[in-house]
Image (cartoon, rainbow, N blue to C red; front, side):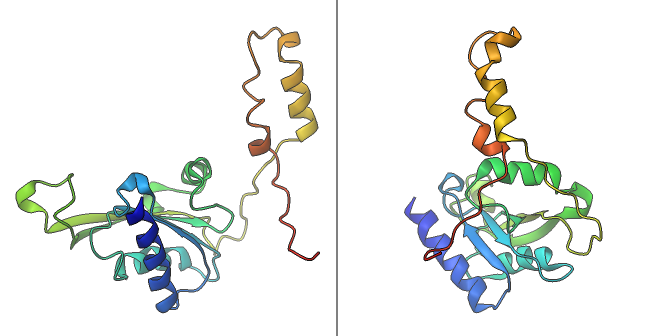
Length: 185
């Protein structure tokens, strides 16, 4: 956990020091041993920006040592929201266009996925789960109506289904998020 916190902070600092624009969030999850994977959210400003971010992460003082993967997501995805990250990988990521394998990166002797006698070098992958900036026609995210979802959930058994509605606990995730109100307004 501590490794995740300090490496997340140092990676974000590294990206700011490198003056990489548009960074909205940075996260190195504890589940990745606090070092092997990073997720970065970016507000894209130019074609290739998300790719720039992924490569910059690997070039940082934090990312060049032992990092095996980077997932770059658009600014509307929180870096610690795995459901939304999986959604972005499912709906915005094309393996041929958006995956980049980098050979011969510096590894760490702490990497259990490598043979003990060959832990100096690892490969890396950048997964760009962003809608390409240069696309003229970008897909729109579709949200469901809260009232309809609640009605279906409340009447689940009336429709002939047994048990509780699987929608009941998902309503907040299926409707358009409420806009965040700024303090003082």
